[in-house]
Length: 613
Ligand code: AGP
Image (cartoon, rainbow, N blue to C red; front, top):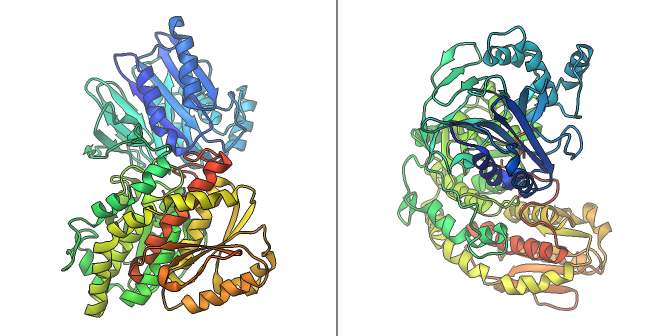
């Protein structure tokens, strides 16, 4: 989604800004732009399309001085208000003097636009962002500094935003404001930076200050002044980042997504390392004091979005069946806008790859007011808002995930949840034999995933049969139902084939009406206690002329024939089967997307990190 980079330095910052934008590309965007102050001149260059278009445009004008500036801001835009046009790309300018970049949404933009227009401000775009530029310009007239003007402007904005403003009359300063959309200050030597994501700044610094909700900050080359939501000047801690960033490196793979699929055995090994052994789960793996919280936990509420929500749904099956703790799972965007009842001694668990998903953050904020005993974040980005705002945290060690379609983040979340089952089960009379079974399964897991990846060629070949398909149905039962949902999400996300998932027991309650030879049915069929039930569902599809692709355990005894293509998945222990069966579905969606010729790593209309609701 939208990305922000800004810099105030003694050197020309244009390459720092462009590199920052490139590092944010994975988040998804449709246009980009940069504003630079060169002496007393404010130059703005914007382009639709990829950052490459912008950097080419800058290269073409490098002799003109347009691409020079010691203070500058830059942005990748993911359209919300106003179409994908150069005029709507950020930065937006007021009075040829102030330039603004913005993530999030100013919800009262219409009222602001009307009032600013009445005051004589002309709008050059359809965006909500331009209201920030004109509001600040207007308030600057009655303020002693840009900081003062922004402090006055902030209460007039309703909605979520992270914004950065520069003024060509004072090139030494950037003023930034955070409300609901993350901003991080990067500290250099004699130069300072701002970004919406630390990834953007890793080439120039590893020292960061994460702004808190409601903070406004004035940043110069040598000073940082932060004013909190109460108007008080505050100090925020400096954090040394140990985030790794491999965005530039596909390691020889054609796409990040494929690389990330193949990384799964290794990153799951990392996620397990030092936390789980054949002897048991280490103490307080979910954060200091987590075992004491788990001992009191009587109910678990899981909240997340998208793929992370599917991880939560799988965890519900596990937590109730293995740890004997009741659990319910909810989509964050639903939870945040409804009145809910909190059961006694409930633990709130949020899950997120990025830790910056707006709905999940809002749900956490609401839950904290509702009386949950404690909050645990299962997250892939250390230092993210979700981690910082939760009482307990567990870091999945998937490494940077660049493909918009989540793969390794999902399977490491599932591994994390199996560890949560062990950590909670320990306090809820989990039978020793069951604990041993899960421990052993976890220890075996990375090798099982390596084995499963050897199916790639077979799945690649099978993907050909999807080249002319427009719809598909995914079926699973029990803890494989969320895996079917995740398989369907992957396929629709990157191949644009309509895909729906059903718990296969639901077939005869409606979806059977859809079955015909043009609607491939993908079935996940491990050899578990629900196998015979699943086989009945398969027969229901066969009897109606459906064509099936069955990912099955060899011992499940499915045979390929003219209506059914069977891919034998390596045999694995039941508790890890949802993780193992995820991989063939990821590979299937990847190879189908290749045939369809879509942009696998940055599918249309989607963003990696959904920082607006
Ligand atoms: C999955 O492939 C998607 N990109 C999407 O559903 C994602 O899982 C969702 O937006 C939640 O993101 P998060 O895990 O970063 O919170």
